[in-house]
Length: 175
Ligand code: HEM
Image 1: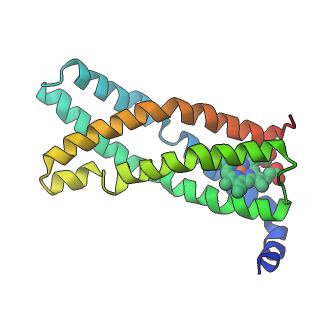
Image 2: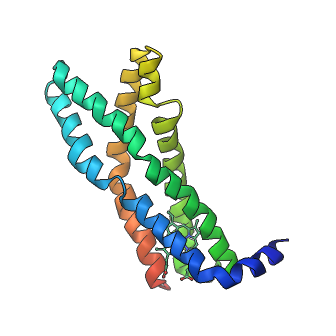
């Protein structure tokens, strides 16, 4: 079954790699401008004046838009996680390839748990617009705070390990 699938996919190796690579680009960079130039300034202004109604309104607008904007990233991630294993089947990279082992440790040890939490905070239980529509402003505040703490904690690890994963995949170093 797996062999038959691998044989079927093999002639499309380059096309699958192209889709993998395009999805990596979207996943890694699609939220950068919004985060840096809209979300961070809105949260900084709110932190400086926590009771200012306009600062709160800007913060809420920014985080709700971010919940929507991150959809691109969250469509790209499953595309990576589907095309990656297909490439792995076709190429046969394994334990003897240091770059591949390190990349898998990063993907499954760092990216996957972070993304699960990110999906939850943006689209599921932590979705801010849903709390607002339900009139649950206590949950709204709690999840805005949690989402902000989450974003501040994961941004630099994602940038660092994201770039590292790309470097490993492209340069394929042996240690
Ligand atoms: C967010 C996670 C991932 C990132 C950032 C990433 C990044 C990349 C990049 C940039 C390439 C292109 C390398 C090149 O053309 O030289 C690549 C190729 C590849 N990736 Fe991923 N990848 C990810 C997830 C995965 C997963 C989960 C797997 C497998 C389980 C995987 C397996 C592969 C394989 C086998 C190749 C082909 C290497 C080659 O033939 O040159 N990737 N990846």
